[in-house]
Image (tube, rainbow, N blue to C red):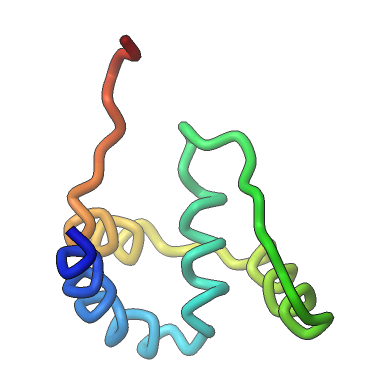
Length: 82
């Protein structure tokens, strides 16, 4: 299962590099733009991590970028909870 996620991250790296932001900010910004997610919990062990994480709050992806990420991840939420 972990290999699956590694493959997906490897596919996303060129996209992240093309928009010139750190991978951690990319992940946070993508998560914040998901309408089904109301909040995220982020850990940081150093002050510079906090600053970098906070920098993700102002990042907005184009629809094209968002769709490319969704295509790679193929990670749709379930429509109903059991």
